[in-house]
Length: 363
Image (cartoon, one colour):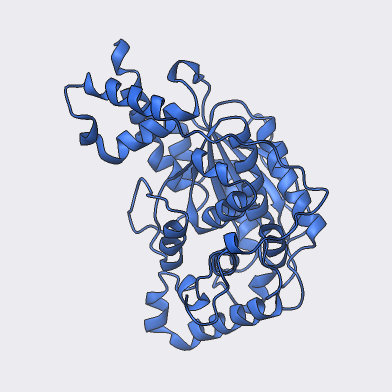
């Protein structure tokens, strides 16, 4: 283990808050189902192993529920939006108001996310998890291109260099809110996206804390470019994160680390994963913040991992390390730096293809 890195989460047992109510999540591993899928793939006149990771995805889908039980309701894209007090430390080149503007653009249908969602028949819901600014006048409900849910816990997190980003009760409330959003959504497939300025810093802090990755590696944002073009700025940002990590060195459990270092959108995504897994839904995960939410959710309920599909591996070094610790093979590796669930929408046709292979026997 690298010097100064905390031991992995699994070696540190911490008590969970008594008011945190976690839904039951069943493991899906089943050798009989795997054999059945292998037989179904054979009728394509190709050896089962020839399908590679698409075959693995087909097995994962079949383990979650029999193919005949999957509904034809459209998949749901949830974009959780929030602001981070960590931005006060200069962790982003964008102003905090960027998050609100992105939410407005999503609701007005002006983004590539809207176009791809429309193309694939995906319903889009934007969740105000903790925007730091008030939303301006929005499109009428009958003209909006995405629905809006107001689940704000607070007007952004606090600066974690000065104190915890949120209190433990606020973190628990955000986890419960994420669960509740999913509980009231139709469909069997959930796509998760996020929109937040400076949340790469929070994700890097959580990766370091929960997996023992040195912060200098966790926060090497494809910033290899920044490290080359502006090493002074990169070092300044890394120093700010190191100071945050040192201040909250005793916050080691999944909820304690989430409260001290995370964001409301990360907390709600983790809650969404927990609820979706308890209802045997497939969950597509995008971005480094989504990976941080997966670390929290799996820290609380390890079986959640059986329901997660990682859509893409971004160009960020920290995201690549995060996927290694999650033992996840993403469907796409396109060197993108996108959020708002765009990677999930790009990967969705591959999920449809895997489901189509499972239906090949009866066709």
